Image 1 (cartoon, rainbow over the protein chains, first blue to last red):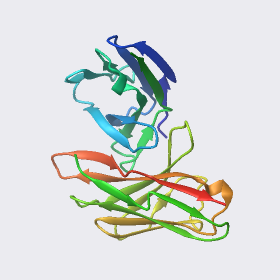
Image 2: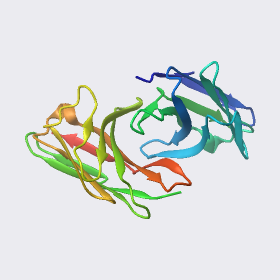
Image 3: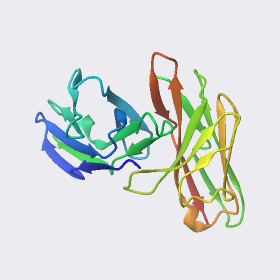
Image 4: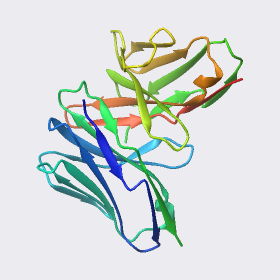
Length: 113
Length: 117
């Protein structure tokens, strides 16, 4: 089955700096890669996703890149703000996996004011 | 994005009792819903996939007789934790798949914090 690895597990940045979170996946059949943000005690919120037919997607301060050959994808947050502090999860879904998402272990991002 | 509700948001029960958690898609129909369990500071662990009108598919290691799932309609799935024990205490989160042909995205409910005394 699919295995998703996420790094780093914790990330501390200064307000205004950029943050990068990286994930690797194992199943070459995976074709959908969402990123979720989870604040303490709350539900995971979808912040951006990318499908395997594109290499990069951007939404304001957030961007995601995908390298299918290397089987890795990354989340980039620019001009970080304290409210970006949360746990971020990457996930991967294969078209032949019953629509099931496999999640990475999560990254706790702390943005210091 | 689409809205998924979950009820109750928290529940405290005695050991040996059963607890039912509801997951509803409020503004879309979900043929597929998912149930996750999340321990503190850990990732989401998929427990089972709930399919409307058919039996749920359980992940390895998840007892289907203990965690009963019923997906009775296109907007409602329920998870019943039977004969709950303290080790079942956790944060349970459901998600619903919106697949309209244009979008195919998974949205999460707010979660249910279960504490078994």
